[in-house]
Length: 203
Image (tube, rainbow, N blue to C red):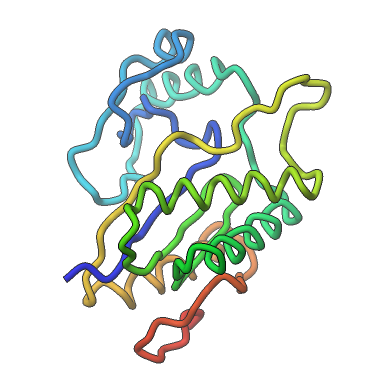
């Protein structure tokens, strides 16, 4: 029985559709990005490939792809991350979603979202939309200085794995330890609801 979803939301420029390690994309929409990095690298696995070791030529191709981006990659500051966390709490209150673990990193977000009758793609779209609106509201949208338009904050789609009860504690632990692995302080977010089993989601 599915009890929830482990979702990773990437900011713009963090994980490109033609990343040599693989991606969840089926095509590369931007011509410059396609020329620099090749076609999409659709994954056949749902396991994380973030730790995949790249060959020197793959590293160079990845660098060329990043250099071809139209806008600067988005990396959240501490204030921007707090705004995103506030937005997640708001959408949970409005839509009655449940988040059981959350890590808002500079360039990606980990969420353990409880099972919902709403399609998970719609749920993730709501999280992204509320976060973008909150960043606008607080004047924290990461637009380039002097740019008349607003570049995208989020990459298209997300990486999502369906979870069973036996996955819960492992995923909660993995998400909560994510900041430490990147040299950041532990995180506590108001949007997080403890897992019904009664265990501390921040343990």
